[in-house]
Structures are given as structure tokens and as C-alpha cells.
Image (cartoon, rainbow, N blue to C red; front, side, top):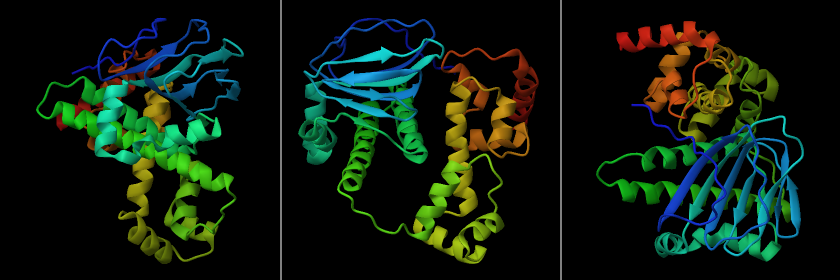
Length: 309
């Protein structure tokens, strides 16, 4: 069931399909790219590397989770600072016809591109939580793109629409921030933000209650009322989504489990498979990343757990 999503980089700047193309790149040998433009829309999601990205006359230092929204006709290119790190990113190309098809269903889907054109800013930073949302939605597109099942095209357009709407939300919040609109964050939002920044730490209700000077019962009630799930359920989901990116970054499976608060690899495997329908080792192999020698013990555990159902 392995699905190899890793894309081999080439220099082409034209689409080979009429709808969209999506690429997951991880380059260890860099290829310089000259300034270029194209006649389709591009969503560029940065994961790792030491570079800035030039779009038009502006140059943006890139950090994990940054998004570049590049409309047709705008010149752009990466500019490498050093060549020490792998260069990882996910790129989505949308043809104008396909974009118009989505726009006919959701007229406001162009918001992020219109805002970029108006402000001459096509780069947006995200917090950790928002980056994980965008990363997961891009994975949904890549996974669905490999399937041959009923309602395949309809599901793809739903996933791409969901991605664009999420980016619109990020851009909208950026605009509000730039307009100096500040309001006190409600308790559940502050708790979410704190957990997203401290996923590797002990985050029991007692710890959170002490941090925010309220009772753990109040945190539990407010969180459930606003998020529709318990603090524990939310925290588990966030840790699992963060572990996806850690796995793709090459961290050993056992380290990923420990770093994100799981008691042992077996409990991490069970939670990962329950959430995503696939084990962590199989997820990693789906991107064409070979297991490392240190992972052999974890691989054995994974197969044992899988065999037991």
C-alpha cells in the first residue's frame, strides 16, 4: 500500500495537466532557479532550508510554515543562503480554468490572491498550529490524488477548496493584525496557543490550571464547549499531526514518540494508526524515505502491534 509522493525536481515551469499538479520536494543537491513566471496559480509551502524567496521586487526570509501565494505573471525564485540543509517544500499548481471552476462554487476563494495583488505582498507567515493545518490539507490532496475511487474528482476539489479557504483565513487574520485590531483572546484560544508551542512538555489539566490561574474543571468545561472535544483529545491530535512532519524530517520513530509525549512506541503507533489509518513507518515509506538502522526495534514493534489488530 506504499504511496510514493516524493517528487523528483526538474526545471520545467509549464503544467502537464489541465487542472492541477502537486509536488513534495526534498532536495539535498540544490538546483539554482532563475527568475521566472508562469500562467497558472502557485501555492508554495515551505518546510526546511536556508533561503529567502524573491517575489517581484520583494525578498522574504523563509521559515517553517511560510506560505507564498504566487498569481500568474508574477516573477519569483528561491535564493539560497547556504547549502547545508535539505530543501523541503510542497508546491501546488492550479490552472486558471480549474481556479475559475472553484471560484464559481466559492466566489470569495480569490481573497488571498486579491489581497496579495493589492498590498504587493505574496508571502505570509503562520504560527505552528496554522502550519500544521496547511501541511495536513496538502497531504490530503496528495493522498487523494493517488487514489482511483468513486467521487475522486469531487473529493479533490473539496480538499483544494478547503486548503484555499484555510489560507484565506490566515491572510485575513494577517490583515487584521496589520490594521492593529487587537482583542483579548478567550481562555480556550490562549490554552490552544500554549499547547501548540509546548507539545513536547507535560500538559495535564493540573499543569494548565496552574499556568492560567483557573481551575482545571473550568478549563475542561470551556475547552469542550468551544472546541467540541476534550483537552486530551485536542492535544493528542496536535501531537500526532506534528509527528507527521517530524517523521518526514528524518527523526527516528522512537524519538518522535518520546518527543511528543507518548509513553512508548506502541501507544504512539496505536494512536497514529487510529487517527490516520496507516502506521508511522508505512507513512514514512509512502514518501520514499527508507527506514534508518536505529528504527529496526520500532519496526518490529509496529508489525507486532499491526498483527494483533
